[in-house]
Amino acid sequence: MISYPVRYYKIHNPPHLNVLKEEKSMVNEYEIKKQICDIGRRIYNRNMVAANDGNISVKLNDNEFLCTPTGVSKGFMTPEFICKVDAKGNVIQANPGFKPSSEIKMHMRVYEKRPDVGSVVHAHPIYATSFAIAGIPLTQPIMPEAVIALGCVPIAEYGTPSTMEIPDNLEKYLPYFDAVLLENHGALTWSTDLNAAYMKMESVEFYAQLLYQSKLLGGPKEFDKENIKKLYEIRRKFGMPGKHPANLCQNKDGLNCHNCGGSHCVTGSVGSQPKTVAPEVVAEITKQVMAQLGMN
Image (cartoon, rainbow, N blue to C red):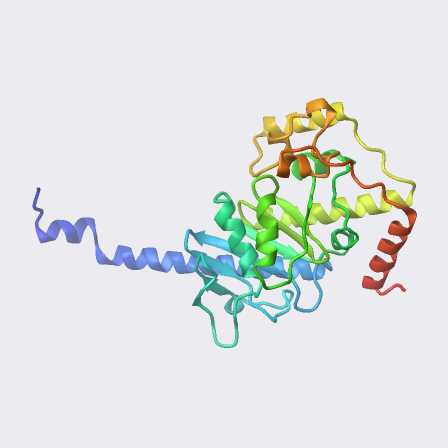
């Protein structure tokens, strides 16, 4: 073993470098907190949440995560509101008066099962949540961007908020999708970083709004299986990150995740065709959307 003089260690491992690394880490963490607050304002200003609804988290490393606090409007947060938890959801750091979101359990389940994920966003966007309430998954291939970016968005079975029911019901969808609707609850998206996770939430809501409005006009014109295959191939060529039906469903016998409601990917067996939406269902969705918009 080579023995170096003390002067070598002082030159090659100066103590101030460790201090600088720690300070840099703190600066980066503070910047991420600011970004979380910015995304919180976006989801609030875009009517994706009301009052204190919704939650956001970001992965710092395998055992440190930043998350929004419970009982606080996401539109009015500042960096000192943000909490830090470990991989089990236990508090590492939180300022007085703030506690991590009560929904942190479902965030942790995403990170546990999807090591590629760097951020999770949960919100209650009006159109997507209306579909979740009506029990209608977003599986109709109606525009290239939705097919390429999302594939389809299944509905995770209902679970009581703040319990293990939600993460347990969510788990089977995690290997195959980057977005789900939560039955009678809202939407959940995840991706490599905070901005990408938020953009998926925007995409889910835009998809839901277009699908809803096209139904009012007599029903959307869907892509046929050949065009879906072409769009899936575009995604594969782009090498886009995350999970997507394009990587799993190869349109066997003309079936894909857009016409099996996502059940083919999740269970390995072909499910039923998507629900035909009856006029009374559209009317009910209309009623719910108008109520949330204060138009009734």
